[in-house]
Image 1: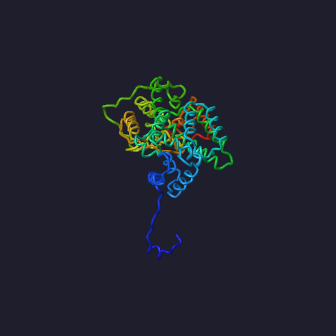
Image 2: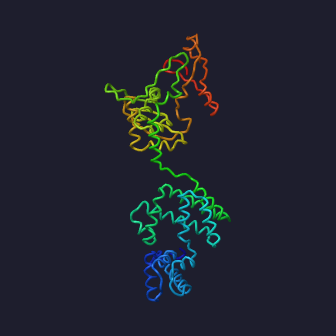
Image 3: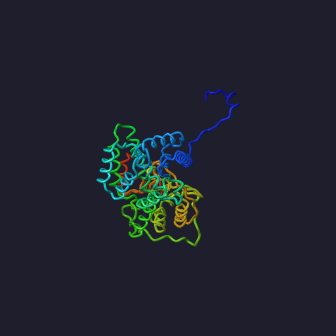
Length: 404
């Protein structure tokens, strides 16, 4: 980067890359054969892997081990010289997680620390160990992706059957956080032991698809819900029954929601939309309950979700789920509208609870027609919401000339 451009333009650039473990293995095997070294292929593969792409380092390691062993070079010699963690330690810690045995995990940790093993190296080896489990679980071509012998591939496949892919990823993330903790502090043993206790005591991780299926089965086994709080009627009026049956599409004339002025009609039919969605798929109806219509025009209806309900919005925003919502809107409003899902601030969501009041009897109807506000007694649910959010009630005229 310090060479002038006039010189660089007259030069040839060569980018040196790391040497693949396979090429390092072939080179070391050739050297061992020429030097008549008695070293098994498994030990050569381990040296090539530990050289991290440097042929010089791989040859130096082989030379050192050959001088140390003075005869046949075994796998244990390579592990001892390089300080590599024995695979039995890794599989033992893995077994302690599957068996939920915290005592076994702590015993293994205590044993290898007494032998002088480095905790940081063990955690790194565990991350690679569970990476190999994940690879063998999700692919059939593990031989080219996992740099171990064929006999170990079989062992990894057997071990991977004891975990779900969600559990393997969770374990890898946990050990990654442990690595960060060790780097930022002078402690090593305590964070590692805490991570192992956490993993051995945690319950099995359930996938998102299984959670959704459980919600669907639970919803189908329950009775329909009662009317939501915002469907409470004013005092003195007989509450109308809410029909929880699936809504069938009307074969007659259809009405069109042409502007935002029909928001009252949309709100009054919103419970029917939710009930229709629940009848088709209980989880979609439950998630849709967290959103409310915030805008409607001739072609689209915008459904707002608070920011804390972003997960609900993302689940419903898939093509299939959005199609079901549009089907429910069409059945309830008798018009074709495209559903648009968005995140809104809480104040922008027009929650139907804002229109729930219990009015006192007003004898002077003339004063109401002149615009004077009737005295109202606020519903306890609304009053609680006002107290929590420090809100106030804004008066606005209804379609009957009265003030809500």
